[in-house]
Length: 426
Image (cartoon, rainbow, N blue to C red; front, side):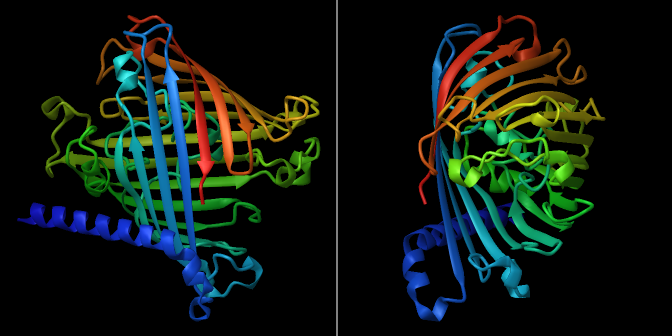
């Protein structure tokens, strides 16, 4: 009976959220035009992405895939369009809903023998990824979020990852612990933070807690193509981050005006964090040997650093070099306990194309010998070049080399070229 009530609740909540989102999308202009509502702002964002890719070399077979995604986000609040310098307390607060719709073959990477998806979008289906109430810090220091949301981008997410296509790079340090609510999976949670990314001398400290149980309901229940076991449990996470915006760090950086040229590189900075989680199936502490999935206690630490390359090597263009890593302490429960990555972004590398960004990255993910004996690691090298068509439309050709696909040593490297189309529709 309780299970049936939970299912009804989830379906009802999802449909109401989707209805509110589409209503807001269609009526934003009308609502803002009414003088009675001029104190309430409604913001709607629609983002589209398509990623055709194929592998002419390597893997089990030579084939291709096209994944397409549409993200819709609705925000309601008093201070959305106000100058932050004049915010009152109510201006800091807003409610938000976010929906992801992905179509295509999400199993392409498995068909060719890779351990991780070659595309940013990893599953096909409909996903309610956020339904929250949030306090934005503005020019202050206090931030708060509660409701249904994903671990990223609040935690385990560096905005420099967004410049790449492969899921192992464009991800939360390629974390694979079952039940952790990484997008598009969502869970009930709360986040409390203190500090301002730009203005805080000591950076920003964030604390978060999530219930693992709703992950299955709010995420995978919308898409039967990628089911996971029903879990219960919880997760606690702490993260400190700070941007290097001092003159000492950026004085040697030749600044390309991002407002004129469309694309700004991520600010230099550092992020360090860790989480503890414990999950069960059906409320029991069964081991993965019994249910064939890794559950139980997981402790993970992670970090990243972004620096302007001009502070190391003189250059006439904007650039960023970055390092990232993650270590899982419980190899009996963590399928991929180690991760390391390095990358470089350069803006305006081609003369006359100051808004374009060229990227290269190499990452490796190590597998648990307790869970998958005989496997070692899978490594990825990606080269891409983002061509800015306009402030809302980008085209990004890319090529990926997957070394030791699946980590077994049985497959030759996979060479996979492709292209990403992205557009902000609203």
